Image (tube, rainbow, N blue to C red; front, side, top):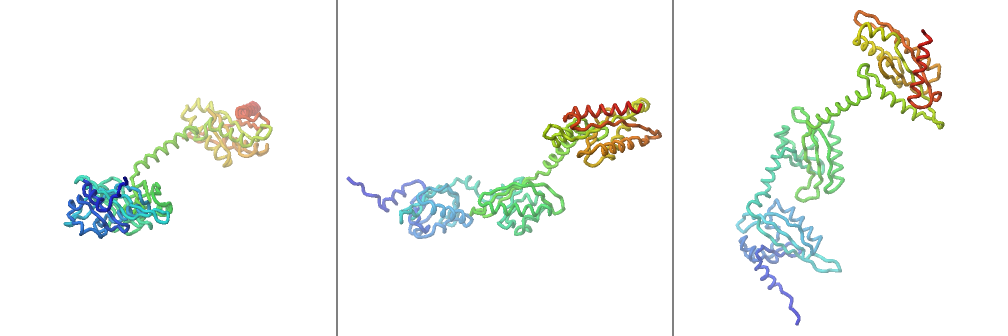
Length: 426
């Protein structure tokens, strides 16, 4: 026996028995039916609401959001939307906080489903839930956060700023609204801020970016703020770019201190503390790089190093002590550095021994000229307090590929040549 379909009158009676508030709308958002639960709760008569627009009963602040939900249901007929919260107007003019979910009613037309109406089920929110979601409470929460919260339009004009901008940084909110948000930034950061905002807008819905920019208060004091912007221009409730800012001034100072400390440690690891010249390991590393850069197909490299030993330094150290000796070594190191070309490297190899890496591939005559210049500078008198100290220097040279092209062999060859020259002058 066939079963007769339920007619509209029977559907209405079924809806009236439901404990939830139910309303049925046509394709133009006009009320077709409201169940007894809704009418009794909100104080309306059915004949008063049938044919009226759903949007007549929605709080003005919630209209954009509900219109967007309506458009989403039109785009997806037959689907159930997300739960939405809003405020509906009772017959006495008061507002009721409700949560509602809607399903688009559809029919086939030309092979494509289209929405013919909307079935909406509502439930009243408890007093605390309504309070928790109230705009006044949410704004109060935002005002009391320690972060900056800004709302910008697509052109970067400030539409809203929470109280932190005033209490923390002294800016007058009312004077800033409608003006470019970059006016609160350090002038040197405004171009970067404008480009970042353009990129956010061009990136589309929910595009986000993070950047550190300096905020300048009316007194000229500067704070480093880490800004996190998100594009919400497509959201009907927001229609702007939300920018959250967190003050990282102290963090930046710590990062800078750590960076300087790391630089000092890196410098100390590669330099002699007495003379400020490269130390032995740093010099060896530099020679290894030079060999690798100049190595030929046969495994040799055209690299020249000098090995310098001070003549007469032991006597200076014995007579004046280590303090005088250290001052002499520092003076010699400065003279060696000043006597060399800009790309040449000099190091304190240890004790009173210094090494030099000559840039390029100087010929023998050029190497002899460098050695003579270094010996002349070292031979110049060194005045310390009321004492004049005179030193000499024995300087040997080694050139790859005449020595095996590795650092140890090259330095040994230069050291050997230095001792040959030292003995020849005795």
